[in-house]
Length: 268
Image 1 (tube, rainbow, N blue to C red):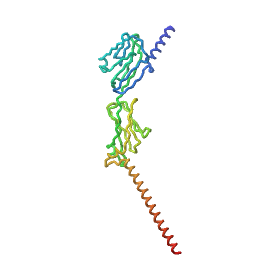
Image 2 (image 1 turned 90 degrees about the horizontal axis):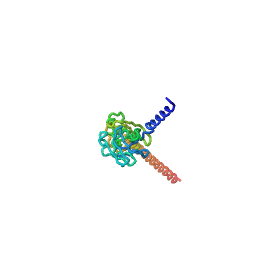
Image 3 (image 1 turned 135 degrees about the horizontal axis):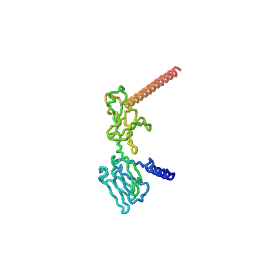
Image 4 (image 1 turned 90 degrees about the vertical axis):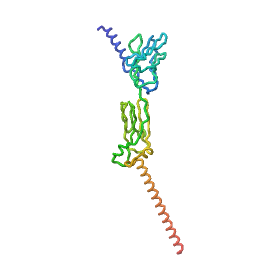
């Protein structure tokens, strides 16, 4: 191959790798139900700009008369009445759904090489986690001085569920299955614990309320918060008792000393 041909071949390969390389794909995330705009990196001068979802034509904009065309029945009709194109050719998707997640390509009439590539991920809204006492764990527990608690969320995917003590992470689990229930077990100690569920763009936190949860304990479980409270009350009772005894002893000694001094004075 002549050296000039080789030069142009390498140049074309380099150009294509720049278009299709990792750096050319723009990742966009949004929560389900929100609107998202896939903005072109620069205003395209092509007379015709087309948008494709997973290589299926979904919209076109014509520069000459600034009109748009939407392919309502394409991609199983999932984008019906939810697509818009602005004057720059950027695509706007309203009322997003998880089925909108995927790859979006922008092409011009004069070139089949994509002008822009977007990777859109639509996440299910993150619910506030629920903390409950785990009766199954408590009834089978050999320890009678603690309760096990359950933190859970339902019908979510691509999230992480974590227990924290203050700002310190204790444990966490991650799943991508929408139908699973997530749970973590924790031995109750104090109110500094919290459960956090999050995905890459949202998080929700629920703080552990010992006082409220301990009221539901069964006869098989003495909550640690109740145990700690009992220990504190016992310690306070002991301190009060010791103080009362000390005062009584001091009073008796004072009276005895005063009586001795009085007797000594009278004998003189």
